[in-house]
Length: 244
Image 1: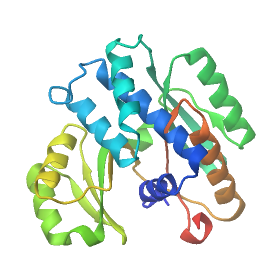
Image 2: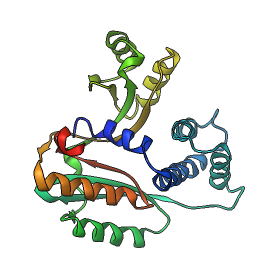
Image 3: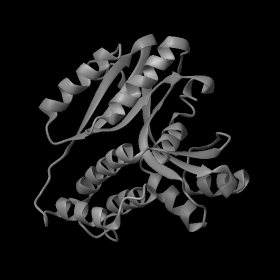
């Protein structure tokens, strides 16, 4: 699942029930609020433009997007969120990075600690886990949308580091700096993008199976269900039979 976790997460999000979908929309709106602080016009604010693209891909209503932008610019009363990144360990020696957007860090940190401890994990000190990951852009494209050789040519020419064939999808890997340029090049070639984000990818993986794997998946679900949590990255390799 380390190699397939991104696509698995996308599929779970797309198949979410109404309650889960509402949480996903809320999390994206927080990102829009943050991005809109740099300006409310997506033509002049690249970060906002791509966050709006993410919102549209998740079917966030147009009015909800507009209101989030106005909250970011202060037109509807300012809402202040800040980034909070937590490093952690789960059972089986799995390393985790939990990215949050919060308006109250003094609430979020104890919540993360409690969730991890209930799930058999623990918070780690700053720097204890981060070196096991590299922050990279990942652009996901359905395999049926483009021939691999064509995608490889476009992506590498635009500055991508790699294109990985994951069966159902291709994953284009970039540095954070090259992310937007590569994404624009793919879109300009009329290739449909399924999802995209800048996230933490593991440098190596830990093999998990059985009870450890099941417990980790439950822990990830609980973390992702928390309103403040935007993304959970980990280095576990879990068999498809368990994730199914």
